[in-house]
Image (cartoon, rainbow, N blue to C red; front, side, top):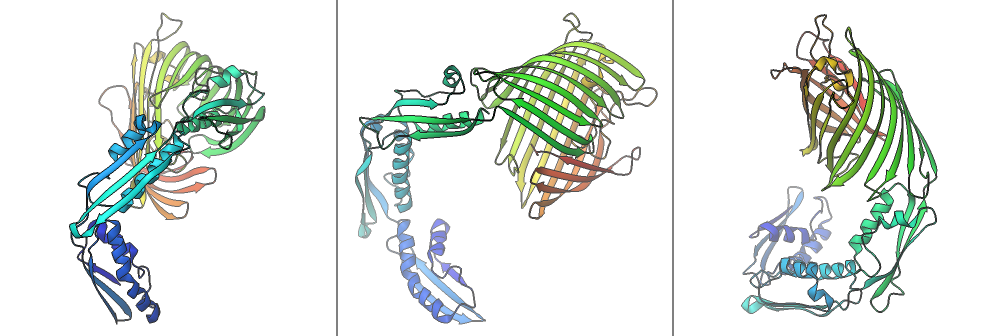
Length: 549
């Protein structure tokens, strides 16, 4: 057991960490404990000096009793060393570099501050790291010195760095024979003749790797032959296979077993155009679609696509067949993914005893943003989305409406587990709501809505008691997940929500528990939920797969 008296805060932490006795068990040999104990005063002295305490006094005591050793150190740190003179100087091109100026300005090394050797070493490392990142390859310290006067509790720090010239990019070559150079030019934010910037080169690497065009991206910087302030950059690009096929199986309580398959033609031409075909088959939701994708301004982010598809929905609430053709643009603004679309929709649906046939020209826009510490298994993150869509009878549509939908998910660490919060809402402004087909009505209930209730089983009912969907929807959930063993956790949750026509909604509530398995193919959830009313089943089992955000 170790006890240190007379110190607190960072000093206490540093002293304790430095002790050779730290981590020794009670049954360690006596000779070993005594040897380490003798080395402890010197270790404490060095640890104190690192934080500016050069006149520490230590009174050590060691006892062996009650089956364990006890080491007690009573310390008097004395007054700390204070910086009376500080000379931090930049020479060379870095003297005018705002990044270097900010680094020096923000440093903890300043007159009046307590001497801290760690901060001094940190600043040295930061200067050298920044120099390497910004192309000052000839940089060096011309003077680096700490002078300490323990008798007067003061010190002088001298740190002079000569960066030399900042290198510029000479040749910047993207080595490949697959795509038109004009397409690859759109990836470049830095060009030949620009000052070297490792951050910009890393961004180029990420953009090329994220574009979906290349199997391998290697950025080679010719440091060996760099001369006269110029360095050549060559980016070796290995294209992906021209065609890709995928097939997968899954299951959920909402949809039952499902099969997904896709075919992607990654290179229709040298301009980076792609064709993606998708097929999904399930008891509830089956679809077939094709999409022609054209990269635009920023090929790894911005695109325009032309799509056509057919979908068949068959729930206990409604049946629909949907044909759709349209145009979609995807971009990014301040970290938000912005999607604009224009769809021509032909839908035939049966809702209760009502049959609705519609042709709609539907423009819309949506924004979404996902932030997480780990997208596969987030402990801290959120996802936000907002979308607006509508149609107008005078513009090639059978109905007039506007819909606004918003959703939010938050995940926060709580003790050893996670707190998961979810909220979603939608509102409709429609002249004749009965004219809207099923896919433009709101329902609630299911694995990712209100557990304890069947998929799309909540909402306004007609005179026969059939659920026909509502103008608006509101759902929310709070869940706590606690780890049990590796890759397994247990969850408790409460869900609430409903679909409704007026602003006096009668929310449905359910509570339950479940287990989670972090499988190789993603999270798998099994939940048992009990609704709070007596109108529905006593409980419902839910099975679902997919990401948390």
